[in-house]
Length: 296
Image (cartoon, rainbow, N blue to C red; front, side, top):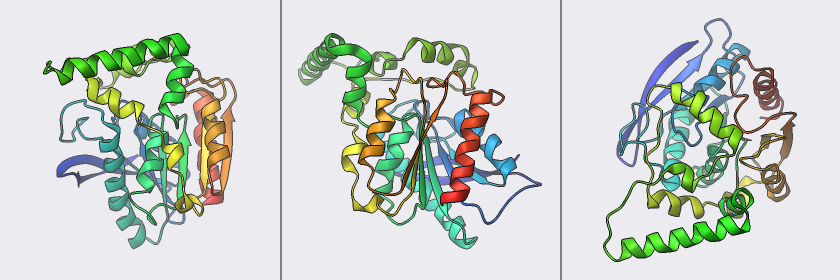
């Protein structure tokens, strides 16, 4: 796989990106696919994994580090969803320029948290995206929080938010918060994070109350409008996903106003099968590649 490094800017910060191609199979008739990372923000994890899967099929794939991650500038490991949406929109602008020069289309694909981020990004770069792929995403943060925590746990978390807001409003110092206290993991995903993702160079997330505010406000499903009516969407999701319940893709499918397809991966949880040689990942990435070729 050939990597062509690209630097671009978002809110004045220099971000690190790359185009990936296959030396022996680069089909100029296929769209360029932007693979956006989920919560970890690093292109060297899942974006490059998808590049390794899709470039042998003839695709050009673009991946990048969100601000604060990898080689990109910004406050280290800080996750503010609105900022990442702007990072995605600026990545689209860079890729669109190349796609136009090569007379190609652009597909925006988001994994995990980015499955919803890409929907909000489309509203910032209207007319620049020709297809969408939401992979194992969630589309209403409060709905997912209630599903993961239960009603009692959700009430406790709301009380934590209220107490912390009051403490900060009275002049208290910001404190680091375990990101998975804000964004809880199911047991299988937690095991994958602490056995696989931690192996990636630079892996880590620093969290505080700003992330909690940003996450709880996240509801891309509510912002769908006529701009999406001409953009085909594939919603691809693990059928046994306990982190982002299968009710999430089904709800998005019902709400999406444009051409749409729903693919549920049998025996797939959220992320434990995200390994290059896992048959479920091969099936999942292959289904996406075929859908893009046929629908965009």
